[in-house]
Image (cartoon, rainbow, N blue to C red; front, side, top):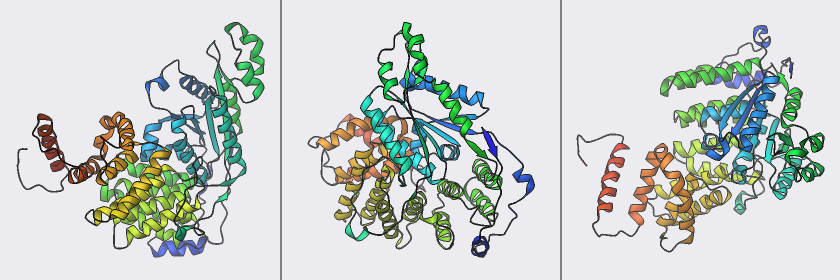
Length: 498
C-alpha cells in the first residue's frame, strides 16, 4: 500500500462558489494548512456480511473468504470493518457512511437475491469516485459466475450509470429525452470467483482452466492441482498493495469526521446548529465533494430536517462550476425531502425529479421505484383516498420495486394498496405471494416503522370488507390497535384504559 501526498490546486470557479456560499452565511477558510496535509492514514477496507446463520457459520464459504481478507489486511496494516447486509440495505447512516467512504469495498454476491441492492450501493460508491470495488462469488454455478463476470467487464468499460444491474424502466412520454447525463466510468471492479478445497483452503477460480480443475479437487490432489490456483489471501494482498491512499484530502477527511462526531454527539436542533457551523467551513467546489454533501443530507434526514435538505440541494444548483446537485443519489434524497416537507407544489416537484432521475439511469435501484410509489401514495392519501388514479400509479411503482428486489418496505406498501384497491388474500395470487415473504420479516422490524405501520393498518381497516362476527381474535386485534394508535399520537387527551 502506498500513500500519495495531495497537492491542492485552486479552481477558477472557487472564488465564485465561495461568494455564493457566503451569501448563505458561509465563510472562507484556508484549506491548505500544512498541519492538515502532513497526516497519513491506514487503508480502510469494508466487507458486507450477508445476514443469516448459514453465512456467519465458522465453516461457511463466506466466513472463510472473510478470514482470508482479514489476513491480507493484517499483512498490509489495513483497517477492516464489517457491516451486515441488512443494515446497509435498511440505510442506516453510519453503515452507509462506512461503506461509501472505504478505500476498498468487498461484497460477496453468492446470494443472487442480494445482488441488485449490492450493485446499487457499489454504484453509489463509484459516483463518489471510490474506485476499488471487489465482487466475490463462491463458484457453485458457472452460468451465474459468467453473468457476473460479463457484468463487471461491461462496467469497467461502459459509461457510468447511477447504479448497476437493473433493467431499464419505461417512463411516461413527457419525461423522455431530458434529464441527467451519465458520466464516463471511473470504477475499478474486480470479480473474484473462489472455491473451497477439500482441505478447507480458499483459492481463486478466475479462468476456465481453474474452474475445470476445481471439479476434480480431492483431498489427496491438492498438491498436484494447487499450482494451478492463486490462494484467495494472496489475491487480496495483491489488491491492497496496488491501492494508493491519498492523505490529501486531509481537509475533506476532517470535515467528514466532524460531521460524524456531530451525529454522535448531538440530536435535533443542536445537531442542526452544529451542521450549520460545519457548512461555514466549506469554501470552494474542490472541498465540496459528493461524499460530504451526502453526509450532510444523511444527517439532516436523521433529524427529519427536510427543509434543510431541500435548501442544501437548491444552494448547490446555484453554483455554476459544481454539478453535484445533478448526481442521481443527491437528486433521490432531494425528491425524498421534498415529498416529506410537503410545502405547496413539493410533491409534484419531487415526482418530476424522480422521473427524470429514472429516465437518466440505465440501471435504476429498487428504492428509486419505491420512492415514486411513495409519492403517488401520499398524493392518494392527501385526496382522502379518492384519487384512485394515483393509487393505481403507486401500485405500479411499488410492484416494480418489489419485483426487482422483494423487501419488507415495498411488499407491505404493495399489499396494503392492493387491499385498498379491492383485492383479498383469499382470491389474489399476488397478495398470497407477497404475504409469504412478509411473514418472515414482520416480527423483527415492525417497530422500526411504527407510525407507518399504523397508517397502513388504518387504510386496511377502512377499505377491507369487515367480518362483523365477534371473536377472541377480533377482540385482541382491537385491543392492540387501540394501544398502538394511541402510542403514535402526538398529544393525548388524558388518562385512558383500552
